[in-house]
Structure formats: structure tokens, C-alpha cells
Image 1 (cartoon, helix red, strand yellow):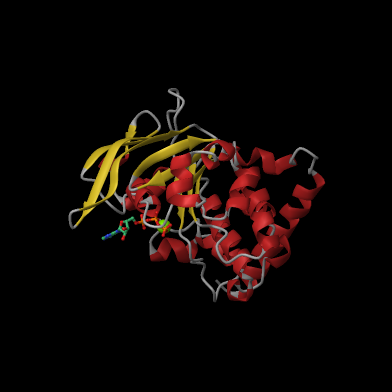
Image 2 (tube, protein in one colour):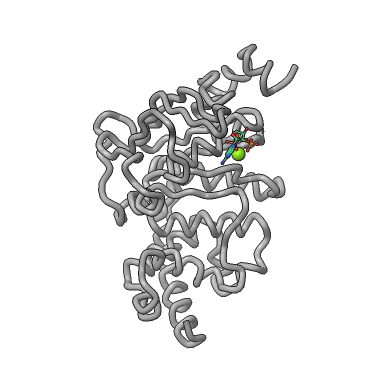
Length: 291
Ligand SMILES: Nc1ncnc2c1ncn2[C@@H]1O[C@H](COP(=O)(O)OP(=O)(O)OP(=O)(O)O)[C@@H](O)[C@H]1O
Ligand SMILES: [Mg+2]
């Protein structure tokens, strides 16, 4: 994109941000309406689940990394997943996103979409966004360009070159910038952001696609306490509009954001409940939290 176009784009976004601020209310204002935009197809959640895994298993060279794993998540829920190293948390996300094929089991997105019939790219298109631990933003591009790029991922080279944000997309970009607290950094190079800001930018890139379900693997690892607190606020603001599955080892972060916590161990669910409940569970203390 040329500098002229960049400036024009940034100006348009700035206008939208000003518009957003004007409409802010104590209850979250326009940000609360984020879920209105629907790019992916609707997901049938009439049975009360956005994600459903039943008896899922996968082995690597004879080692059962996931072992008869069953769990489900309600629409709009923020589910925390904890468990010792090697419990299978990342592998579970690999299975949901189509990166790893399980040997057996059922994985459904809503009531009707069998995720095991879809490839990784299709699953992203269906509305499942994934954040890996390491930030993967484009460091030599600005915050604006990174977010804009998130809308072009499925386009060819020519279409991408001709791509220009329409008004709704501009509006979305402004909302996302507000949500991830980067309104003041639109034209900064992503490479110059702090680690926490890069993580938020990557989450923003996922939000540009308006995912129904967000999978976040150790999102606050390496963040300062202040960045961690802001990330907790961010996730709480996303809950309800999106469903979230958050894997973390940081217990104070989990305490801030959690409702139901699922404890994974040896590839299956060891315990589930509020953080207080699972922290009081002898088996969880034994394998993970320590005495
Ligand atoms: N592609 C693979 N090939 C072989 N083994 C694998 C593969 N992926 C995962 N594993 C093994 O499966 C087990 C589960 O790993 P996984 O990365 O899912 O754990 P985790 O719960 O995410 O751990 P951590 O908290 O350390 O991130 C580990 O023993 C790991 O070595
Ligand atoms: Mg992991």
C-alpha cells in the first residue's frame, strides 16, 4: 500500500474512532455491539454448545497425547483450560483447528459442523480463530496494515493489491482498535510495539474476521503485570460476543477471568468446576498445583 493510501486509510479510521468515542456508554457502548457483524456462516447452537468434543484420542508414536477427551463449551462462554506441561492442551487446540487429525472421536462446531471433515483453512473460515503463544504479527507493517491484512487472507495477490476497506470494514477496524487499546498506535510499526501490544494486535487480527470461537494458547506468557491485567479486561469484554477457550498457567490471571475451569491431565479431563473447586481437588493438587 502506498503512503498516500495509508494516510487516507488511517484518517478514515481516525474519524471512525472519534465517532466511536462519541457513542461510548458506561456499559461498553459500540464495542458491546461488536458481534453484530457476521462474516462466517451462522453456527447452529440450538443444543447449547458452540464446541463439542467426545472421546477424542490421538497417539504420537504409540504415546497417547489425547486420551478419550470429552468436553463442550457454551456459546459466549469463556472457558479456561489448565493442566501440567504435556497434558495435551495445545494438542487439543491442534485437533479443533484441523492441524492434527485425531485417531478417533467426535469434534463438532455447533450442532451441525463436523470439524473432522474440514481442513485447517476451512475451519478458520468457519469462524474459529487461533492465537499461538508467540506473537505472529507482521513487524515491518503498521498496526493499521496488520489489521487490514487480516481481511485479505483468503484473497489472491491481485485482489489483495486492489483491496480497499469499505465503510463497514473501516468501522470494524475502528472497533477492533478500540477493543485492543491500540487506537493511539494506528501508524506505528508492529515491530516497535511492546510484547503485550503485539499480542493484542494479533488478537485484533483474529477479531477482524469476527470469529465465533477464539482459541488462545498461553496469551499472557511474557507479559508485564499491567499488560496481563489489561488482557484480562480484554477477554472479559470479548466474552458473550465470542466464545473463548483460554489455556494458561498464570493462576492469578485465571482467577480474574474464569467461570468454569477444565483441568487436563494425560490427555483427558481430570476435573472441572470453578477455580476454587478445582484448586481444592486432591487429584489436581497432586498432578498440577503441588502441595
Ligand atoms: N506432533 C507431535 N509429535 C509427537 N509428540 C507430540 C506432538 N505434539 C504433541 N506431542 C506430545 O504430546 C504431549 C502433549 O503435548 P502438548 O503440547 O499438547 O501439551 P501442553 O498441555 O500444551 O503442554 P504445555 O503446558 O507445556 O504447553 C507431549 O508429551 C508432547 O511431547
Ligand atoms: Mg501447550
